[in-house]
Image 1: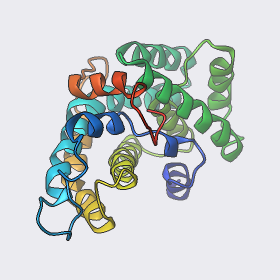
Image 2 (image 1 turned 180 degrees about the horizontal axis):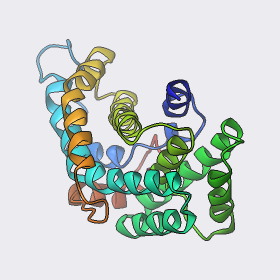
Image 3 (image 1 turned 135 degrees about the horizontal axis):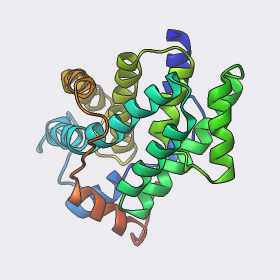
Length: 240
């Protein structure tokens, strides 16, 4: 179970997530149009990138991803565990409705479908997961990534807690990696952020498991507006 969880949550797993910044590229362009505002750690003469960016990533995780995607992940895990494909589709459709910006919706479903295609080969014995994959392929379910990830984790016998912890780490690691590629962080700064966010992710997972999974919430207007503006940027490194 642990090996499978590590495999499907690793950045090497070919879901296509590498091409997306989760709206961060647009946020960086809107917040720091001046390239020198956030200097690389150790560059001297400026603020440490980790000090500036860590609270931003923490707020995106706790204010947006945790109580929205995270709760739908819990619903997906329980639906897959119970073999309730209709409930899985309902959670998938409800999550898509909560993603206002088109770019974030498309990123979620594109990555999710890519993930499902590959995980079907990793877990060929997971019949319920395969049945839901057929629903996604037919268009009956959109195939959001977080739903696909937690459904696959449940199919592999991974506990809710461990699946959420892996997803939480993966979420902050992907955002940190995007900032690294955008030149806002050095490698040491990136690892500093991941270390500082460890208690944030751990507490978030514990809080999430005690909440009603049918009461998701999300508040990230700045990120959503930046995501909407992203497609009109002069140059872009990421698809979102």
